[in-house]
Image 1 (tube, rainbow, N blue to C red):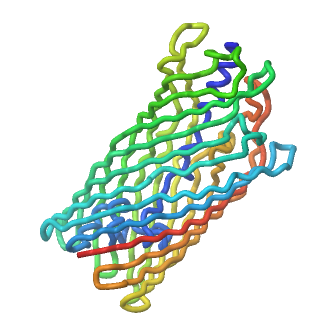
Image 2 (cartoon, rainbow, N blue to C red):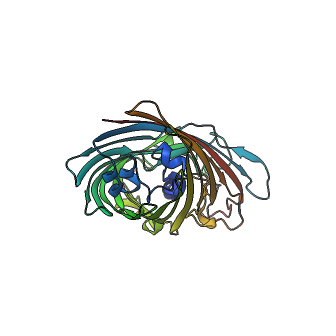
Image 3 (spheres, rainbow, N blue to C red):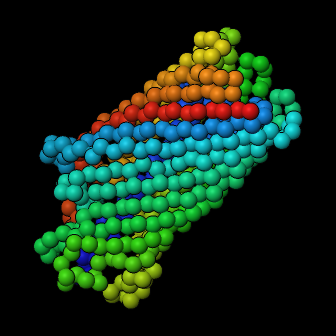
Length: 421
């Protein structure tokens, strides 16, 4: 029995790739998304609160921006090798929001407030699929509340700084192999947590045709607290499977973005960003049980899973063409390097390096109201895993590596309304 409960801990809390780059959402405004996300050096609408808070000094008066992005992911897994059977991720639609407001206090000082879902999404596989002891249902939501102030030091230089408060909730569910006994169980983890951090930025307008931006978003430590709840297990396992309260801290990565915006011709604007993502903050996942004790030592159980994520980056370019006074057309491209090592990849998040192709437009409806629409296609590199250390059998010590081939893609559609007065 002791062997079974230990295995259960390991199976549940190895869901570490939940917070990989695929769950960092960078689409926080249709205008930026249409430019491939290359916006730190331009930052000329209220979504600058996220991309570069120094940019809100360009927004005279009061501005309110709101919208959402529909994300439609698709993923499959062929394996485990040598099998070539294909398993499909169930279809889901996610809709992270972006809400921002800015206000000019005086000629130099500007304030902004924003709400966005910086980390999120989820995966859902069939209940009886081959990898059910690794992942069945995973979902995370986070809400980042940003309050920023920006100051125009001179005509050429603006500085921005702000505080961040974070709320998140998480659900992880998967099957449990009760070997050496017959049968399976299901274990679900629910938790919520809060955290705090900060953001900062600088915008330099070197010339009328050239601006440079640098932004920083700090790490945020989110202290999740929740419950582990087993179900569908034989009565003889009552009290032997993990249950009760848990605590699990998680630190999101820092982000440093350098951006440039160039206007080589009157109607054309070129943008480019390089975004560094410090995923080495996620070196392990430690879960402390507040009620469930180790049956051998009598101490409260602590489960630690080493993750060792790599730091990663995203490179972006964008183009905007002002067709007339009312209509702007946009296009963009990005390359996103994922942080998960091959041997650590699991179906909780079938992540991979990805290419993104975007397009969109902005249309001025009235003097005070404008509409932004954009589309982003993400194509993930096919990822063939041959050296997995993740086991799909759910049996402790078994040599059943989750080797196989992952294929993924995603469609994103964003709509934003911008009002100023």
